[in-house]
Amino acid sequence: MPAEGTTAKVAGIIPARWGSSRFPGKPLHHLVGKSLLRHVFERVDKCERLDLLLVATDDVRIEEEALSFGAEVVMTSPDHPTGTDRIAEAVEPHPEITHVINIQGDEPLVDPVLVDSLVTALAAEPDLPMITAANPVTDPAQLDDPDIVKVVVDGGGNALYFSRSPLPFLRTRPDTLVPLRHMGLYGYRRDFLEQFVSWPPGLLEQAEQLEQLRALENGARIRVVLTEDHSIGLDTPEQVPHLEALLAACNSS
Image 1 (cartoon, rainbow, N blue to C red):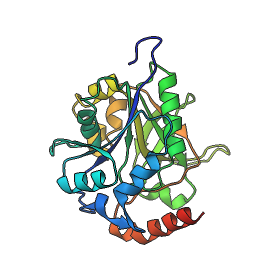
Image 2: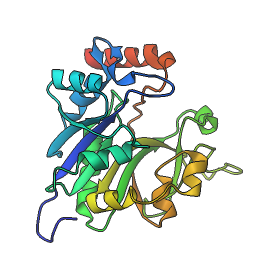
Image 3: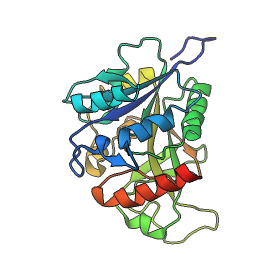
Image 4: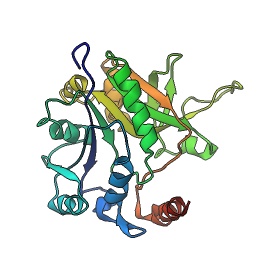
């Protein structure tokens, strides 16, 4: 973490790989005239709190695309099991960086204001190891959708648990209880990121296939920033028309 009295230096890193099981080559798929990766980069390039913005990949095709629109690229090992491992390698040549934001490479509507808010909150608490975001569930069907990750938080805004199952189970529903959808945006204190990738996957992480559970299983706090941003990612080819409509509407507004 930064020494006392120093300023945080923050890197935003976009991990991008070719071999998605549900959508191979996804970062290079074009939506309304631009690659998915370029949409993400151009949105995050508007952030005001990032000192460094990198694309981390293991594929020369993705590297060439990123370089074509002016991104700085780090080539990483093809053997990383998660995007978190990839960003940990990507930041190694930058010892000045104190905090890292993991920006999903498949979310073309990512909100730069939300990214900046995560940076601000993370840097404001020197002992906070990790941060993420969540928004209210507006469609009850999302609670039963295993592709929608849910999160519950404690009174201090820290994550209690993440799950693909309905969370919490609503046997009764207090008037003020709003289920939360987890957003795949993470921030780490650098020393914690290095520790995180040294831990083996935990049993809950393996069961749910949610790597953030590794932090909870090892007793780490994850702050959850609540937002009204409902942007979605591109997971399958079937979602392309919907995302193109959203991008076209965003570009015309």
